[in-house]
Image 1 (cartoon, rainbow, N blue to C red):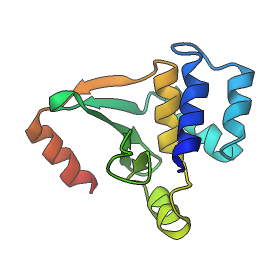
Image 2 (cartoon, one colour):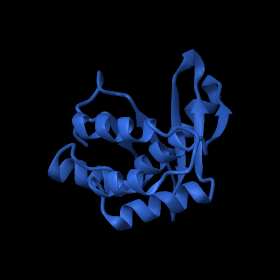
Image 3 (cartoon, helix red, strand yellow):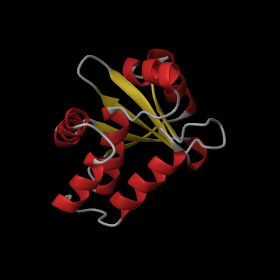
Length: 138
């Protein structure tokens, strides 16, 4: 995903924090993602499948339950990668390597929507739990 697109989506979603998204916000999202991705992301949020994992040192990442598995989503990694967000799902990995950092999978969008609507479950992880989680997902 291009950093400019990521920033536009974050800005659009940040204008309405903690509330349901109105039609204007949904139309903004539709300008960047397909209806299928948008509906799938809302479904993930509605099912409370987005978990914010608070890590040692004040950082965080997200675990998102997908249709077949749980995936790890990271946001705000511009200093480490040309992508401002990443996901361990096969769709994100395939499209990123085949077309470049221009994709947003339903899991990343679900995290952005979940943050905007305050619809995340938070969980703290220590280093041992973090290592076990990453071992399972990578």
